[in-house]
Image 1 (cartoon, rainbow, N blue to C red):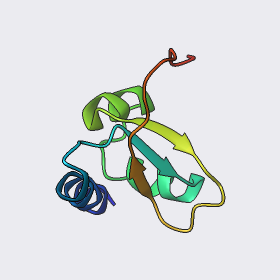
Image 2 (image 1 turned 30 degrees about the horizontal axis):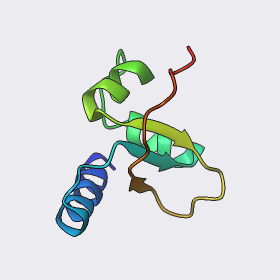
Image 3 (image 1 turned 180 degrees about the vertical axis):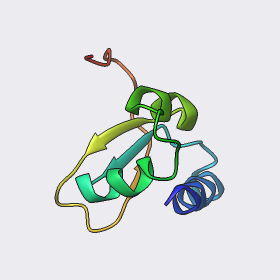
Length: 76
């Protein structure tokens, strides 16, 4: 899953000349993504590693990336 996300990022950058900062995932996608990391890696670590916000979208058939203006603070 991690390599798939990297390809999404690369494709987005090539198409838009801008690095995406938002990753849209379903719960199943997130589960697959977290399995790409060690067991002691938490969601905050993954967000920091990817340098992207993660938005849960249960309607997402496939993960996707985008760019969103960051005018908010992440709720913890």
